[in-house]
Amino acid sequence: MATSEDEIYSLMFSSLRHPARRKILRMLSDEKVTFSQMLQALEIPSSHLTYHLENLGELVTKDETGKYQLSSFGKAAVTMMRGAEEVPNERIRHFSAFSLRWKSLFAIFIIAIVLLASVSIYQFSTLNNVSNNYLDLQKNYNVVKTQNEQLLMSNTSDNALEAKTLIQDVLQIDTSKYTMTLLSDTVQVRTDLDGIVEEVMEYSLVNTASRFDLTLRFRNGNFSLFQINQLEGAPNFPLQYTEPQPTDVVQACQGLLSRYESAFNASYMPQIVSLMDQANDLTTVQTYANTKLQLSSYNGGADLSLMYTNNGTDFQAKSINLVYTNDALTEFSDDWGLYTVGSTQVNFSQSQAIQIAMNAAKSYSWLANGTLVSNFQILNSPVSAEFYPKPRTDNLTLYPYWYVTLHLDKTYPGDVSEIGVGVWADTGQAVNIEAISGT
Image 1: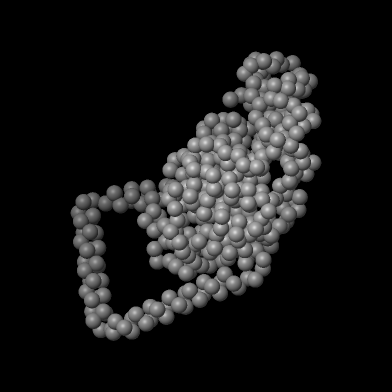
Image 2: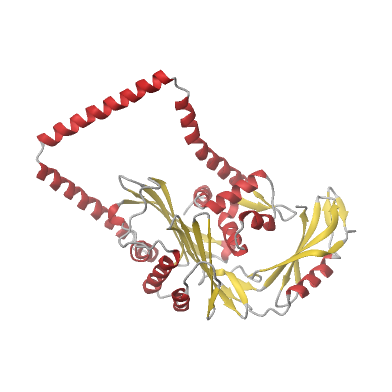
């Protein structure tokens, strides 16, 4: 079983791998921000932001006004991230501090070492039989390959066998080209997800040219998350595959999801594969049966989201997501089978939800420096209502939900200029009323 410290470090490193999450952490290190502020700054769909915030876990918290802020672990993660970014600059500055004379001597010294090494290599090659060298190299290669296979098969648990299938058959990573080491294997019961059993396996893939960290997560015995991060060798030594990988994101996703369906036979995969077979670009939103496809590209990467939809309601949490960076898959998640849908009925429209929220907010009050604030005025506009299903009676069953943001006529004690109200779209019940600090 993993200690809480192990879990926090694992969460820090997995969070710092994704550029969007690093950007969120940098943003929160400067100031507290609201959900809508992050959406505006990151320019990504709200479902993607919700997904990234969930993955940041205990690194991010909400204050009493509803703004997001860094936890103590989040601040430690930012400090770690900044330290890593400053190291290369420090090395450059240290070298630049030397005088021209010392730099010249250093260059001559390096050239001399290279020349001496070349002479040594030549002497060595003339003293040894070429055929014997070849046989030795072949023997070492076979030993490493056997060790890799033994490592993958050493744990015969269902999750370990599925991990092997996913890495080799679905992702087509050529493990024979790396020394593969299991760094950690942690199991925990997620009380925040109704007691599901979660296993996280961390691997390293190393060869003479590059080094990767690979993370796999399983929930209740089903694949949930794959992440890979290149630590050394980038960008000239990409991950090696058993088959050539398409540079077109759509084609790459089509192939991967087709292999995923064949390997694991999940009941929801046929309609997902059918929808992907119809996709042809990154600009349109497409729907087939109960699956909606959203594709977007940004900063040299691409995000693909396949979510469950029913009766015009999109359930973002019940989804499959893929993230590509520099034409390579860096993240793949599947929580489609984890969540169930409690209701698809949207009985209250956006305008109705706004009116319900306004009526509920009239009787709301909050404390600011020990003073109860209740006499405030709500503006009719601007007003916003964001729709996204969320859990209600348990943590794994989704219901349609509106989140309404009401603006006040001025800033009130506690720096409050907005009030947020949740409205269940199937019942019309107002919930989760909160004061929000001004933007």
